[in-house]
Length: 197
Ligand code: FES
Image 1 (cartoon, helix red, strand yellow):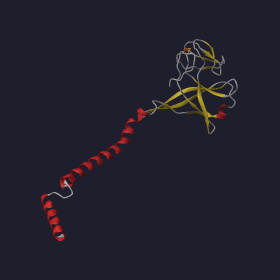
Image 2 (cartoon, protein in one colour; image 1 turned 45 degrees about the vertical axis):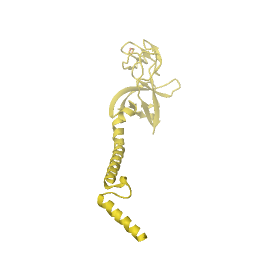
Image 3 (tube, helix red, strand yellow; image 1 turned 60 degrees about the horizontal axis):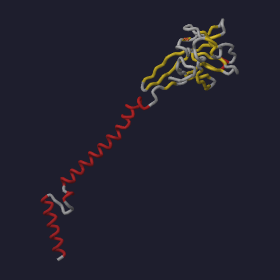
């Protein structure tokens, strides 16, 4: 009897195979398996595509995601150059401004001078009144702005004229004996120093 049942089952399977169906259920027919594999490949393709697109999206959005502008420190000179400073000396520094993918290099004049406690300080040459470049006047022993006559002491403090504050100091650091400065722009026509870029 068992042999007969087994034989019947085999016959039944053979019939199902001949009709393209299976005893495992309608979902496992060749068409279903093909659609399932197709769906699996589509999902896999989408997943791999998404993975591969992440670096491209990051690349494209990089200029938007990073800080709008980034100013790097600029070398001013060896510390030993300024050890026996008796009056402000002008130095031209190169400024590297990074804005997204754009890198701009420009030059700016700064003054290396000393504060009241003989510590080195670096001043921007941009007048805090309306932005003219302020030269050091050796004869007068003062910075004198040629535009509207503002005057500043050797350490940059305001002496007279329309400027509401003294000349602006810049952040400095020392690396391997080299004086470094971080150039910045400050708001004009105000009494307090305020960074604008
Ligand atoms: S810009 Fe310097 S005093 Fe006006």
